Image 1 (spheres, rainbow, N blue to C red):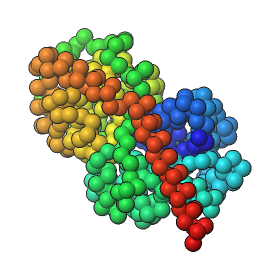
Image 2 (image 1 turned 120 degrees about the horizontal axis):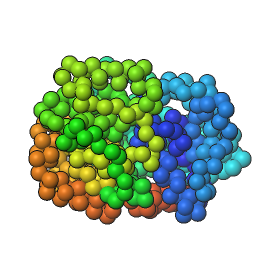
Image 3 (image 1 turned 120 degrees about the vertical axis):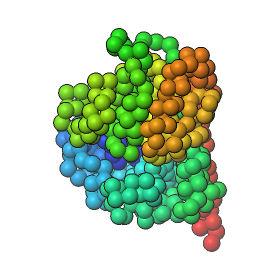
Image 4 (image 1 turned 90 degrees about the vertical axis):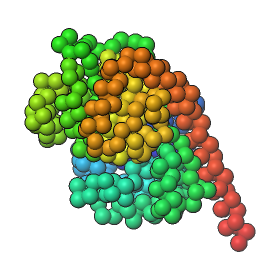
Length: 407
């Protein structure tokens, strides 16, 4: 198939760990690569964020990244992209008239609107993956939510007009039902893990000999990820260092507002000497860091899916995860890790202490995590399900056109 993936702010080429570079980037990159490996021709359309980047860049076999000119050619917060989506859509429409895809798969709400506006006049089927829902974000962040006011009406439009919705977990499917989604047009397809990169075997990052245990967090550095709760929990976990990967590159950490806030929390709670920020990592640097951990923690306030818990489990490390969103599905409490309530540092501390005190439990949970990922969350399995959704969307489009002709 000729497949267009639309991901306006999350480029597969981006360095991970920044405020707007995380799981969606990984998802789009891995899905595109797997589709290309199967022989499909894939173009990933993303917004140009650098004036010197070529319009088209080869990514992997059969996959190119198309940099769309929409707004200033520089990095801007994703919530500031919305005024430029009309231009983004117009460019897509011009491109698709010349080089027509068979299916369009958009990612995130702004991409969904751009895809619908570009594809509808050309009678192209559109599938959509939200990656996050505005009403859920507002529910958890309240006044701290910086999303444009048009976001929730736009998401309802996508629910109504997209040929198919690809949800990433059962919790998201429930939220979509509340938005009025026709569940016959919803496929639940989880995210995946690249088992070539993430596994229990391989090098581990060096440990600091001053500490008996190491806890690792790999995350974008934004408040909703709950990293301050892990820092606070460290007061109840003695002789343990916390290594936090994410945010800007290492040499820019001191200027980052969220890093400064988290360091202040660490100082306030007397654990600053046990918290280390290592900045954004290249993808190949993440598995060794995870393998060096006794326990990895991911405790966001909410999480549409969460690829990081899968990467943790794939490396054979037990995970402490908040019982929200996709992590309710992926992390099996007491089997591959431990669930805790969000925003509860005491619960995080208790779960981490329990794991650190029991090496046999850590080994058992780590091994079960590896097995669960291998059985359920490979990108091969994900691509199978996504391609099936594409075929369903194509089939429904043929039925729709036939009805239009007959009427």
